[in-house]
Image 1 (cartoon, rainbow, N blue to C red):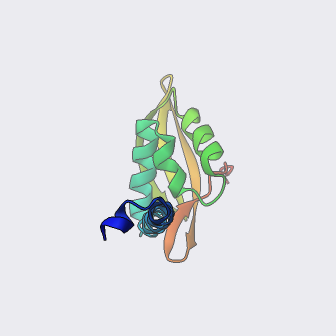
Image 2: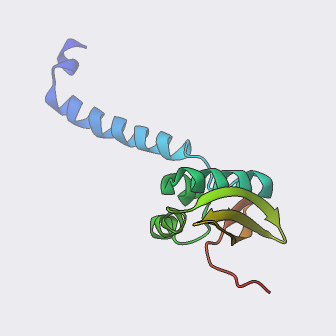
Length: 125
């Protein structure tokens, strides 16, 4: 056993295998993207925008990834997020900017039982 522990070839084999196992375990333990319900999604999106944290918003997006998350958070950089509600199949974020109230609609999509938002602007109709 002592010979094996001092053998360089043994360690050159053990380290890559250990690293692969660690990567596989960390990937398997990643949380699923999105939220379990539209209400939870609304709370998560609202909290991410209040905190101006695109890292929290990114896993809640259906498409776009980091770039869309950054752009969406930047849209709220000078605004105060008042509240978020789930209405008519969309997360509606109500905000105030320079004393003027507004809302921002994020359509909700379901993917494999998880709810995510699609960060596109929908005109009021």
